[in-house]
View 1 (cartoon, one colour):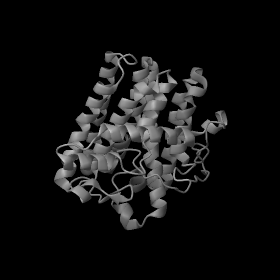
View 2 (tube, helix red, strand yellow):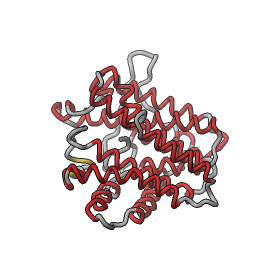
View 3 (cartoon, helix red, strand yellow):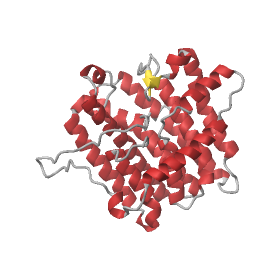
Length: 327
Protein backbone atom coordinates (compact mmCIF):
# COMPACT_ATOMS: atom_id res chain seq x y z
CA UNK A 1 0.00 0.00 0.00
CA UNK A 2 3.04 2.19 -0.14
CA UNK A 3 6.06 2.67 -2.44
CA UNK A 4 4.04 1.15 -5.24
CA UNK A 5 4.87 3.32 -8.23
CA UNK A 6 6.65 2.09 -11.34
CA UNK A 7 10.33 2.72 -11.96
CA UNK A 8 10.29 5.47 -14.52
CA UNK A 9 11.49 8.98 -14.94
CA UNK A 10 9.35 11.57 -13.18
CA UNK A 11 9.46 15.34 -12.86
CA UNK A 12 10.92 16.82 -9.72
CA UNK A 13 8.44 18.23 -7.27
CA UNK A 14 9.22 21.92 -6.94
CA UNK A 15 7.82 23.57 -3.86
CA UNK A 16 7.47 27.36 -4.08
CA UNK A 17 8.45 29.48 -1.11
CA UNK A 18 5.56 30.21 1.22
CA UNK A 19 4.38 33.73 1.92
CA UNK A 20 4.39 32.95 5.63
CA UNK A 21 7.68 32.30 7.47
CA UNK A 22 6.13 29.57 9.64
CA UNK A 23 6.32 26.79 7.03
CA UNK A 24 9.07 26.48 4.47
CA UNK A 25 7.63 24.91 1.37
CA UNK A 26 10.92 24.29 -0.40
CA UNK A 27 11.98 20.76 0.43
CA UNK A 28 15.75 20.79 0.84
CA UNK A 29 18.15 17.89 0.47
CA UNK A 30 19.59 16.65 3.76
CA UNK A 31 21.74 13.64 2.84
CA UNK A 32 23.57 15.43 0.06
CA UNK A 33 24.58 18.08 2.56
CA UNK A 34 26.12 15.42 4.78
CA UNK A 35 27.81 13.31 2.13
CA UNK A 36 27.51 14.18 -1.55
CA UNK A 37 29.64 11.10 -2.29
CA UNK A 38 26.95 8.59 -1.29
CA UNK A 39 25.42 7.08 -4.43
CA UNK A 40 21.90 5.99 -3.51
CA UNK A 41 21.03 4.99 -7.06
CA UNK A 42 23.89 2.49 -7.32
CA UNK A 43 23.21 1.17 -3.80
CA UNK A 44 19.49 0.78 -4.50
CA UNK A 45 19.81 -0.80 -7.95
CA UNK A 46 22.34 -3.34 -6.67
CA UNK A 47 19.94 -4.36 -3.92
CA UNK A 48 17.04 -4.60 -6.39
CA UNK A 49 19.05 -7.09 -8.45
CA UNK A 50 19.76 -9.27 -5.41
CA UNK A 51 16.22 -9.06 -4.08
CA UNK A 52 14.67 -9.86 -7.47
CA UNK A 53 16.77 -13.02 -7.71
CA UNK A 54 15.83 -14.14 -4.22
CA UNK A 55 12.13 -13.46 -4.84
CA UNK A 56 12.26 -15.50 -8.03
CA UNK A 57 13.76 -18.41 -6.08
CA UNK A 58 11.24 -18.01 -3.25
CA UNK A 59 8.14 -18.46 -5.42
CA UNK A 60 8.73 -21.36 -7.84
CA UNK A 61 5.76 -22.42 -9.94
CA UNK A 62 4.16 -25.58 -8.55
CA UNK A 63 0.70 -27.04 -8.10
CA UNK A 64 -1.78 -25.37 -8.26
CA UNK A 65 0.07 -23.65 -11.07
CA UNK A 66 -2.37 -20.80 -11.73
CA UNK A 67 -2.17 -19.49 -8.17
CA UNK A 68 1.63 -19.43 -8.31
CA UNK A 69 1.58 -17.72 -11.68
CA UNK A 70 -0.71 -15.04 -10.25
CA UNK A 71 1.57 -14.63 -7.22
CA UNK A 72 4.65 -14.30 -9.38
CA UNK A 73 2.92 -11.86 -11.74
CA UNK A 74 2.60 -9.27 -8.97
CA UNK A 75 5.67 -10.01 -6.85
CA UNK A 76 8.07 -10.15 -9.81
CA UNK A 77 6.48 -7.29 -11.75
CA UNK A 78 9.05 -5.41 -13.80
CA UNK A 79 9.66 -1.88 -12.63
CA UNK A 80 9.05 -2.39 -8.91
CA UNK A 81 11.38 -0.23 -6.82
CA UNK A 82 11.53 -2.77 -3.95
CA UNK A 83 11.43 0.11 -1.47
CA UNK A 84 10.23 -1.93 1.56
CA UNK A 85 12.99 -4.57 1.28
CA UNK A 86 15.65 -1.97 0.50
CA UNK A 87 14.67 0.04 3.58
CA UNK A 88 14.76 -3.14 5.67
CA UNK A 89 18.29 -4.00 4.51
CA UNK A 90 19.52 -0.43 5.02
CA UNK A 91 18.12 -0.35 8.57
CA UNK A 92 19.70 -3.72 9.38
CA UNK A 93 23.10 -2.61 8.12
CA UNK A 94 22.82 0.69 10.00
CA UNK A 95 22.97 -1.20 13.31
CA UNK A 96 25.72 -3.57 12.21
CA UNK A 97 23.59 -6.41 10.91
CA UNK A 98 24.57 -8.65 8.00
CA UNK A 99 22.42 -8.16 4.91
CA UNK A 100 22.28 -11.95 4.54
CA UNK A 101 20.28 -11.91 7.77
CA UNK A 102 17.90 -9.31 6.34
CA UNK A 103 17.17 -10.79 2.90
CA UNK A 104 14.49 -13.34 3.97
CA UNK A 105 12.55 -10.64 5.83
CA UNK A 106 13.12 -8.20 2.98
CA UNK A 107 11.59 -10.72 0.55
CA UNK A 108 8.70 -11.33 2.94
CA UNK A 109 7.99 -7.60 3.08
CA UNK A 110 7.79 -7.49 -0.71
CA UNK A 111 5.42 -10.47 -0.71
CA UNK A 112 3.17 -8.79 1.85
CA UNK A 113 3.39 -5.51 -0.05
CA UNK A 114 2.40 -7.22 -3.31
CA UNK A 115 -0.49 -9.02 -1.59
CA UNK A 116 -1.84 -5.74 -0.23
CA UNK A 117 -1.66 -4.15 -3.68
CA UNK A 118 -3.47 -7.10 -5.28
CA UNK A 119 -6.30 -6.74 -2.80
CA UNK A 120 -6.34 -2.93 -2.99
CA UNK A 121 -6.87 -3.07 -6.76
CA UNK A 122 -9.91 -5.36 -6.57
CA UNK A 123 -13.24 -4.02 -7.88
CA UNK A 124 -14.71 -4.14 -4.36
CA UNK A 125 -11.83 -2.01 -3.02
CA UNK A 126 -10.07 0.69 -5.07
CA UNK A 127 -11.29 -0.79 -8.38
CA UNK A 128 -8.05 -0.13 -10.23
CA UNK A 129 -7.61 -2.06 -13.51
CA UNK A 130 -3.88 -1.29 -13.77
CA UNK A 131 -0.79 -1.32 -11.56
CA UNK A 132 2.66 -0.03 -12.49
CA UNK A 133 1.49 0.61 -16.02
CA UNK A 134 0.30 -2.97 -16.53
CA UNK A 135 -3.03 -4.75 -15.99
CA UNK A 136 -3.80 -5.43 -12.33
CA UNK A 137 -3.67 -8.99 -11.08
CA UNK A 138 -7.45 -9.45 -11.18
CA UNK A 139 -7.60 -8.01 -14.70
CA UNK A 140 -5.29 -10.80 -15.91
CA UNK A 141 -6.22 -13.75 -13.69
CA UNK A 142 -9.74 -12.89 -12.54
CA UNK A 143 -11.02 -11.66 -9.18
CA UNK A 144 -11.18 -15.14 -7.65
CA UNK A 145 -7.56 -16.01 -8.50
CA UNK A 146 -6.32 -12.56 -7.42
CA UNK A 147 -7.90 -13.01 -4.00
CA UNK A 148 -6.29 -16.43 -3.65
CA UNK A 149 -2.89 -15.12 -4.78
CA UNK A 150 -3.01 -12.35 -2.19
CA UNK A 151 -4.20 -14.76 0.50
CA UNK A 152 -1.31 -17.11 -0.31
CA UNK A 153 1.38 -14.42 -0.30
CA UNK A 154 0.75 -13.28 3.28
CA UNK A 155 1.53 -16.63 4.97
CA UNK A 156 4.29 -17.41 2.46
CA UNK A 157 6.07 -14.27 3.67
CA UNK A 158 5.96 -15.40 7.29
CA UNK A 159 7.10 -18.91 6.39
CA UNK A 160 9.97 -17.53 4.34
CA UNK A 161 11.28 -15.55 7.31
CA UNK A 162 11.20 -18.55 9.63
CA UNK A 163 12.62 -21.07 7.17
CA UNK A 164 15.32 -18.98 5.46
CA UNK A 165 16.80 -16.63 8.07
CA UNK A 166 20.23 -17.93 9.19
CA UNK A 167 19.87 -18.89 12.85
CA UNK A 168 23.54 -18.18 13.47
CA UNK A 169 22.94 -14.55 12.52
CA UNK A 170 19.53 -13.86 14.06
CA UNK A 171 18.26 -15.35 17.35
CA UNK A 172 14.76 -16.82 17.32
CA UNK A 173 13.53 -14.20 19.79
CA UNK A 174 14.28 -11.47 17.24
CA UNK A 175 12.52 -13.41 14.50
CA UNK A 176 9.40 -13.64 16.65
CA UNK A 177 9.41 -9.86 17.05
CA UNK A 178 9.83 -9.43 13.29
CA UNK A 179 6.89 -11.72 12.53
CA UNK A 180 4.76 -9.95 15.14
CA UNK A 181 5.68 -6.55 13.67
CA UNK A 182 4.62 -7.52 10.15
CA UNK A 183 1.39 -9.11 11.44
CA UNK A 184 0.58 -5.91 13.33
CA UNK A 185 1.28 -3.73 10.30
CA UNK A 186 -1.01 -5.61 7.90
CA UNK A 187 -3.77 -6.44 10.38
CA UNK A 188 -7.03 -4.96 11.56
CA UNK A 189 -5.34 -2.06 13.36
CA UNK A 190 -2.87 -1.41 10.55
CA UNK A 191 -3.18 -1.42 6.77
CA UNK A 192 -6.59 -3.14 6.82
CA UNK A 193 -7.93 -0.36 9.05
CA UNK A 194 -6.60 2.23 6.62
CA UNK A 195 -8.33 0.55 3.70
CA UNK A 196 -11.58 0.35 5.66
CA UNK A 197 -11.64 4.08 6.38
CA UNK A 198 -10.57 4.87 2.83
CA UNK A 199 -13.77 3.10 1.75
CA UNK A 200 -16.14 4.15 4.52
CA UNK A 201 -14.71 7.17 6.36
CA UNK A 202 -15.31 10.86 5.71
CA UNK A 203 -12.78 13.51 4.62
CA UNK A 204 -11.67 14.00 8.23
CA UNK A 205 -10.22 10.49 8.16
CA UNK A 206 -7.45 11.47 5.73
CA UNK A 207 -4.68 11.53 8.37
CA UNK A 208 -5.58 8.08 9.63
CA UNK A 209 -5.98 6.68 6.11
CA UNK A 210 -2.60 7.98 4.98
CA UNK A 211 -0.79 6.77 8.09
CA UNK A 212 -2.32 3.30 7.97
CA UNK A 213 -2.39 2.63 4.22
CA UNK A 214 1.04 4.07 3.49
CA UNK A 215 2.89 4.76 6.73
CA UNK A 216 2.52 1.26 8.14
CA UNK A 217 4.61 -0.47 5.47
CA UNK A 218 7.31 2.19 5.76
CA UNK A 219 7.63 1.88 9.51
CA UNK A 220 7.36 -1.91 9.42
CA UNK A 221 10.19 -2.14 6.89
CA UNK A 222 12.51 0.08 8.91
CA UNK A 223 11.63 -1.53 12.24
CA UNK A 224 12.12 -5.08 10.96
CA UNK A 225 15.62 -4.24 9.78
CA UNK A 226 16.44 -2.72 13.16
CA UNK A 227 15.01 -5.73 15.02
CA UNK A 228 17.07 -8.18 12.97
CA UNK A 229 20.26 -6.30 13.88
CA UNK A 230 19.44 -6.11 17.59
CA UNK A 231 18.88 -2.36 17.84
CA UNK A 232 17.88 -0.89 21.20
CA UNK A 233 14.27 -0.01 22.01
CA UNK A 234 15.01 3.70 21.63
CA UNK A 235 16.62 3.13 18.25
CA UNK A 236 13.69 1.02 17.12
CA UNK A 237 11.30 3.81 18.10
CA UNK A 238 13.32 6.28 16.07
CA UNK A 239 13.18 3.98 13.03
CA UNK A 240 9.45 3.49 13.58
CA UNK A 241 8.79 7.23 13.42
CA UNK A 242 11.20 7.66 10.52
CA UNK A 243 9.65 4.86 8.46
CA UNK A 244 6.10 6.05 9.09
CA UNK A 245 6.95 9.59 7.98
CA UNK A 246 8.79 8.41 4.86
CA UNK A 247 5.96 6.06 3.89
CA UNK A 248 3.36 8.82 4.02
CA UNK A 249 5.73 11.36 2.43
CA UNK A 250 6.32 9.08 -0.53
CA UNK A 251 2.59 8.82 -1.20
CA UNK A 252 1.95 12.54 -0.67
CA UNK A 253 4.59 13.38 -3.28
CA UNK A 254 3.08 10.79 -5.64
CA UNK A 255 -0.30 12.46 -5.22
CA UNK A 256 1.17 15.90 -5.90
CA UNK A 257 2.86 14.64 -9.07
CA UNK A 258 -0.37 12.97 -10.17
CA UNK A 259 -2.34 16.15 -9.57
CA UNK A 260 0.02 18.01 -11.88
CA UNK A 261 -0.12 15.45 -14.69
CA UNK A 262 -3.49 13.68 -14.58
CA UNK A 263 -6.95 14.77 -15.71
CA UNK A 264 -9.57 15.94 -13.23
CA UNK A 265 -11.61 12.79 -13.89
CA UNK A 266 -8.70 10.53 -12.98
CA UNK A 267 -7.95 12.48 -9.84
CA UNK A 268 -11.55 12.12 -8.69
CA UNK A 269 -11.01 8.35 -8.59
CA UNK A 270 -8.24 8.69 -6.04
CA UNK A 271 -8.89 7.69 -2.44
CA UNK A 272 -8.54 9.99 0.52
CA UNK A 273 -5.32 11.96 0.07
CA UNK A 274 -4.12 15.35 1.23
CA UNK A 275 -4.34 16.54 -2.37
CA UNK A 276 -7.93 15.39 -2.88
CA UNK A 277 -9.13 16.69 0.49
CA UNK A 278 -7.09 19.87 1.02
CA UNK A 279 -5.45 20.65 -2.33
CA UNK A 280 -1.87 20.75 -3.60
CA UNK A 281 -0.70 23.68 -1.44
CA UNK A 282 -1.67 21.98 1.82
CA UNK A 283 -0.19 18.70 0.59
CA UNK A 284 3.15 20.44 0.00
CA UNK A 285 3.08 21.76 3.56
CA UNK A 286 2.41 18.25 4.83
CA UNK A 287 5.31 16.91 2.75
CA UNK A 288 7.72 19.45 4.25
CA UNK A 289 6.59 18.60 7.77
CA UNK A 290 6.94 14.85 7.17
CA UNK A 291 10.44 15.29 5.81
CA UNK A 292 11.43 17.34 8.84
CA UNK A 293 10.00 14.68 11.17
CA UNK A 294 11.93 11.88 9.48
CA UNK A 295 15.19 13.82 9.40
CA UNK A 296 14.83 14.64 13.10
CA UNK A 297 14.70 10.94 13.96
CA UNK A 298 17.79 10.17 11.87
CA UNK A 299 19.68 13.06 13.48
CA UNK A 300 19.36 11.16 16.76
CA UNK A 301 21.40 8.31 15.24
CA UNK A 302 24.42 10.42 14.33
CA UNK A 303 26.75 8.17 16.34
CA UNK A 304 26.52 5.64 13.50
CA UNK A 305 28.19 8.06 11.12
CA UNK A 306 28.05 7.19 7.43
CA UNK A 307 25.99 4.04 8.04
CA UNK A 308 22.91 6.27 8.33
CA UNK A 309 23.46 7.87 4.92
CA UNK A 310 21.33 5.36 2.95
CA UNK A 311 18.31 6.27 5.10
CA UNK A 312 18.97 10.02 4.76
CA UNK A 313 19.25 9.56 0.99
CA UNK A 314 16.13 7.41 0.91
CA UNK A 315 14.28 10.29 2.58
CA UNK A 316 15.58 12.76 0.00
CA UNK A 317 14.48 10.50 -2.83
CA UNK A 318 10.98 10.17 -1.36
CA UNK A 319 10.66 13.97 -1.42
CA UNK A 320 12.52 14.89 -4.59
CA UNK A 321 12.64 11.87 -6.95
CA UNK A 322 16.10 13.13 -7.86
CA UNK A 323 16.98 10.37 -10.32
CA UNK A 324 15.43 7.79 -12.62
CA UNK A 325 16.01 4.07 -12.19
CA UNK A 326 15.46 3.55 -15.90
CA UNK A 327 18.60 5.44 -16.90
